[in-house]
Amino acid sequence: MTQPAPYIFISHSSRDKEFAYWLDSKLRQAGFQTWFDVDSIPQGSTWAREIERGVEGCGALVVAMSQNARESEWVERETLLAMNLRKPVFIALLDETRLPIYLINRQHTDFRTRREAAAKRLIAALKKISLTEPLPEPRKPVESAKLAPEPNETNFFKYLQQLPNGEKNAEIAQELYRWGKSVTNSIVFSGLTTPVFHARVTLQTGDVTVFSVWAYSREPAVEVNFQYLQSLPPYDERQMRLSTLDALNRLMPDGEKFPDDRADRRPNLQLVKVFGKPGTLADFQQIIQEIVANLRT
Image (cartoon, rainbow, N blue to C red; front, side, top):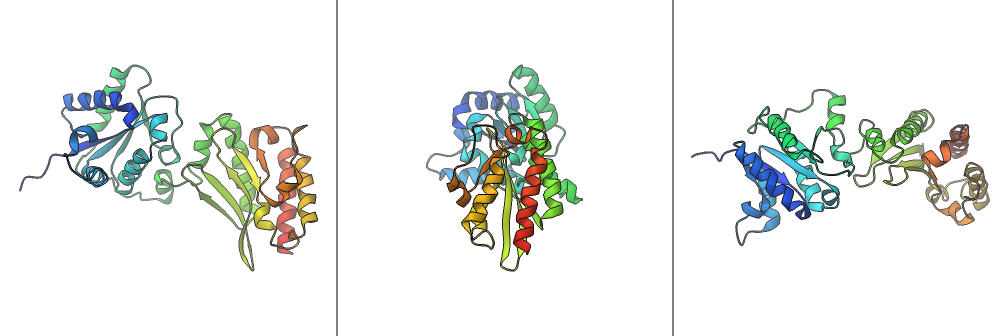
């Protein structure tokens, strides 16, 4: 029985259909078979199942990455499925949108200008790979971390770098990460849409998150998790939480103080805005260290 020819799956938002049609024609002119949802799904078929089969059977996937694609659940599903199946994944970058965490460590081809030249570069890269064999499993833990779709210590800070004030945000977050590893019991990364790491302390009652660093797209920030602390002594006493909140307020810029109700929630300190001032990061670390010591007493 003749095996079907290997093909390239084009993942895209329906709003970028014009580009997808154009790229499809370029790949076919270069001799590749393609899978393009408009033409490749038979009439009357179940859309979701046919797309899943399309990704499972492809030799490689090209994702047309744009703000539209960032907002598309289908583009995310298709790309993550291809990565899980060890398919080669290529990025065609269409606009200024930031790359999602699961693609941050992969090379992209810039289609924002000079489309024809970009298409030639992408086609040259596709011709260097096998469309019939899955990618080999990474041999080393570091290699595995670089390709992992989940946030981790390898890709989290690189993701921060592409956000506003990226270099400074990444520098502050890395310092909090290094310091947090030395004073808490564990650092846990999570979140595909909004990457985050949590610094946790292990108590007899279990692990509790003391602070978290969130890669919010507009203003990355560190949050102190009073909502988790309020059931644990001595922070089950509200006055203790209010005292700690007052210490955090002393770090805030003039005119920007937390109201008392934040002592039961998650006060949010923007990384560059708060910790760009000399001495504030060290003061914050002292506050967290006191929280950790009080919890362990």
